[in-house]
Image (cartoon, rainbow, N blue to C red):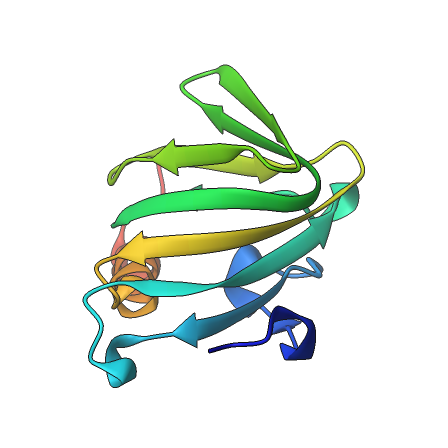
Length: 130
């Protein structure tokens, strides 16, 4: 059992420079789980773009979550559940602040995402500029 009130979120640097997105995985592959789960929170100024290399379900605990997919904004409030399929290029946003509980599949979401980000950064370093 993970007591939600005891979870200490940490800065999620992958959200981008200057962004104060807070995140903490509480269930991981280390738990022998095929899924991961955790908490994430941010304020309006910290909204960020993201590409999912995994499936994700978000349950809004507090505030309002805005997920922009293909120009369409999905708005979810406390108690609502949002499914975001693998391969989605999104914007995680909020008009004020939001705290969500998320579940991802597979559990290695962070490794998969950082591998994609690292590969893109390497391509950008070696690609000639137009």
